[in-house]
Amino acid sequence: MPSSTDEKYGLRATMSPAGRGQHYYPQLDGLRAAAVFLVLMNHMSDLSLPAPLAYVCALGWIGVDAFFVLSGFLITIILLSYKPGPRAFGVFMLRRVLRIWPLYFVIVLAAYFTIWHDPAGMKINWLQYFFFLQNFAPEFIARSVGPTWSLCIEEHFYLVWPFLIFLLPRRALAWVLPAIFLSLPFIRFWGLHHAFTFKQLYTETQFHLDGLVAGSFAALLISSNSIRPRTLLRLAYTCLAVGISASVLGYWNGWDATEGHNVIFGFSTLAVSFTGLLLFLITGGSSFLGRVFSLGPVRYIGKISYGIYLLHAGLFSFLARLDHNRFMGAIEQRWILAIPLRVTLTVFVAALSFKLFESPILRLKDRVR
Image 1 (cartoon, rainbow, N blue to C red):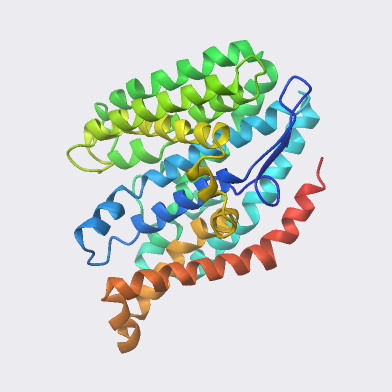
Image 2: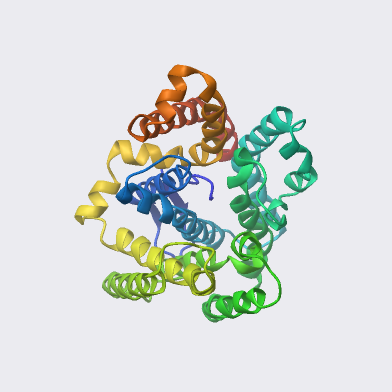
């Protein structure tokens, strides 16, 4: 899951003179809020849900792919605004570290001291979490730190992508990104037939770069003065039509990421769909959907989505441990009570984390130029 917006209330980046000036897209915070809602619903699978909610729960994993598209777009916009050089790379990495590492390591340490003595905790290679390599673990073990696998992919992306941005001209990048994107289904097909598990195909970096690559390509388009907004809007409609149609056809048998045809093509079709949605929100910001995604409460959820993403699994596990309590057990057995309780508690704790812990660090990050 990506970090939250680079500036205080949304995406803000000062482009080079060749770019399009200073941009702020509040609608993208709304898209981030929708993505984190899908992730929350995906982790409600332990509840007895009615069919419509069970369907939303089953497809909730696609929220992570939306986050990847957003991250690829945001990171590339930021990197394109930098003057290439070692100092730029150092500033970029320091700002990413200040945004991602503090809360991440708090979550990991809390999980370690909570479950290290349990059978599950003793099976975990905690050193992998220190180096952001747990996405290469053969299986998910602890629910409380399960969502951190996506941060590993993003951290690996941060280490490599700046060098390509700084070393290659934009015209070359415009060819490199589609080439990488088109190669990913073939790489997953190869992995599927060479003893890689579905979990590995889902979480290992080399197999799940579609969203980051597609979002990065969208950033190249947005930052180009040669492409008219009307052309971008048409491209958005095309991506939405092609991506959604291909996703529906590919997932007609169920939105399960562990099915063979889904894991080969699904990440690609979802990346195209969410890239189309991102371009639509940017170029058609006055649309009804753009206005909804720009609402203050929706944007606030997007602003604290990083905390929601990292904290929710541990909070869900905490509530599950209270099932021996008659009152809490009764709530957890009724989805109509359990879902609002879980969501409210997660948003409340994430809001506290953002105000008391993350915001002071973000102010420090914003002074790093």
